[in-house]
Length: 137
Image (cartoon, rainbow, N blue to C red; front, side):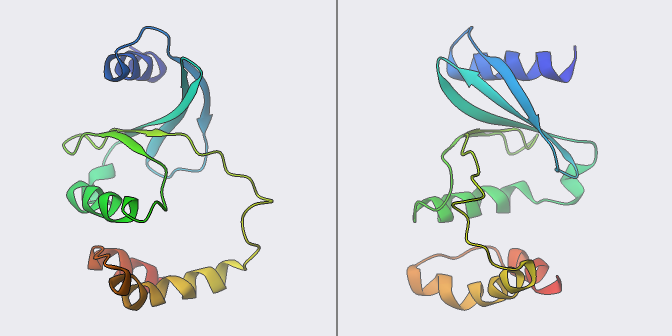
């Protein structure tokens, strides 16, 4: 079974449907296969981690962080996460470069370093590992 066939099968099963179709593959991921899938007029992304992706991401921490960020409404809605495999179904949020603030990359990365101080003030408690990685860049 090809990955595209597998993704259609999984999305149909999760959404109790038979109408899913792949729109496109999202490029740029280092270790994941992420596809935009349409089902009954609604767009989703489905992620299948690549080989050895579990070496880079702690899926329990990822899930905890998704839940924390969702409390503020800052993320697209995650419909399903399988902790064991890392597969994830989420609503598709198409990025529009005109809506994104034009902040230089270095400035954005430095701003990440301030998140450990800012987020707890809003009741968020993200994994410390996220901040260690951000501060290294």
